[in-house]
Length: 328
Image (cartoon, rainbow, N blue to C red; front, side, top):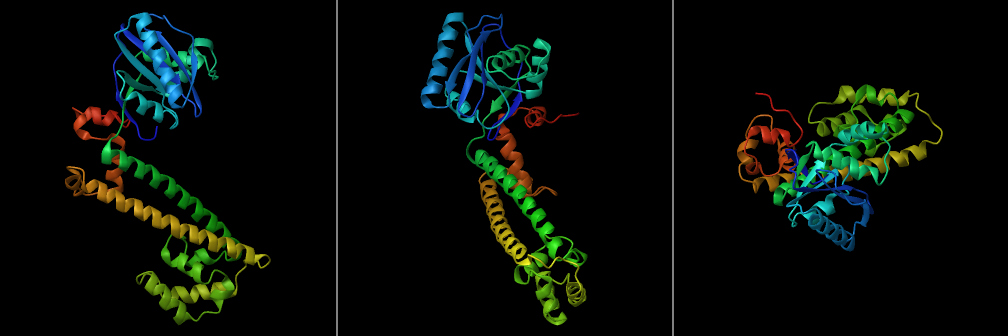
């Protein structure tokens, strides 16, 4: 779940009230039970202040009814919709845990030979998983660690968006100038995007002189490309097999995607700059960044996932937090 991470917890004590939630975007299904099977009927509550307050009142009433000394609230770790609920519960006297969706799926199959979802069945199944101790406690990043996690998630989304845009533009360029990739195979490089932005069509490229295009390519690529590549590109442009009909529509599309790419690249750069500033405020990060192979993005992702390293007692706990295995 976005903003939250986990580490392993032990089996449930007998005096614990087990509260489970089947989380949804607008509403949730709650369920209260005990280790020995005493329970109340699953109930609905909305993702609103009134709904969460009702959920809490059901917990308090069930805790008193079954004479439990503590409360464990568990939910399936799928999607971001549980995050407001978790933040609501942070100030309550409860232990918050997650369960692996694979565990609930297997438990459903064991119980009734069916993995299908139902509003009443899912919270009961989650409770069964909690009784077995197959849970992970929730660690909520705070301060700059939380900020880094948000930045990291934003960067992941926009890098994915950039990849999709590059794939689109590569396809469109193939329609009008298939031979372009013979000289500039990687659309990601600035030289390729510069030529497509300024000239776009093979017709316009073909009208350039070798010296003119060669000098432009040399400056843009810091000497990697020059007159030989320009000469080849111009020659290919003049004899291209690219389509001729409807080319104006493709040109509009290419230019629009190039503008989107420029905006996305600028935002990714802004995110990475913010990552660097946040890392400067975190004790010990500068020393870790000095290690070979660790950059700002890697370090920001690590702290964003794990949170405050001082909250972990051993290396094993840190490794288990992002779901890794620690081997000695």
